[in-house]
Length: 221
Image 1: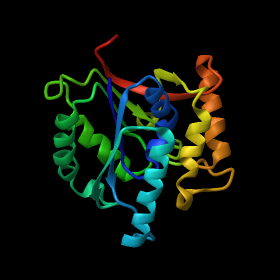
Image 2: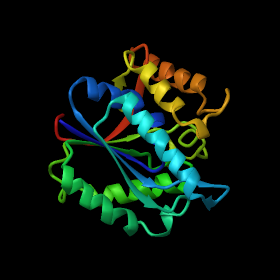
Image 3: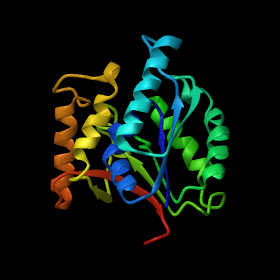
């Protein structure tokens, strides 16, 4: 089984589906993560700080145990300027690894980069072009998904849950690798808040801890 997690930014993979990544790894699935944007600070790109963030990615990768991380190095905070800039490298990577399962950001997130990446995925991973993709899902990102205005089109309504009871601690440790992105409770990206969300998602489905997703396409059902 080959799995691709598409992350708009470095840390989205751990926040959104770090527990699911760790579970895929324990099931001997080959997990790839592509990071679309580099990181800017105060709206400016700093090469040295971005290198530090990449080091955090590799630390989280080693902890979660997945196979490969790739970086598209597109402009943070400006991915919505030209969605084609995302589509082109994404298409190449999809056809290179031919994943069975793809995870991507939620279309209603309160982050223009997340929405742009979703728009790129919906084109690059359309069923007529990528019949090898059996399941396509979107994930939620704390501090982005729940921050959207309370409009119907922004509602994250999960229809698929993954039991991460045995991998919640790896998820928390993976998030902690991103030292520059750490926040204190009650911030949604704090360790405590992430654990609370996983407990809430677990309660919704009957697990101790869970990650929630929306399935957009599933050939296995």
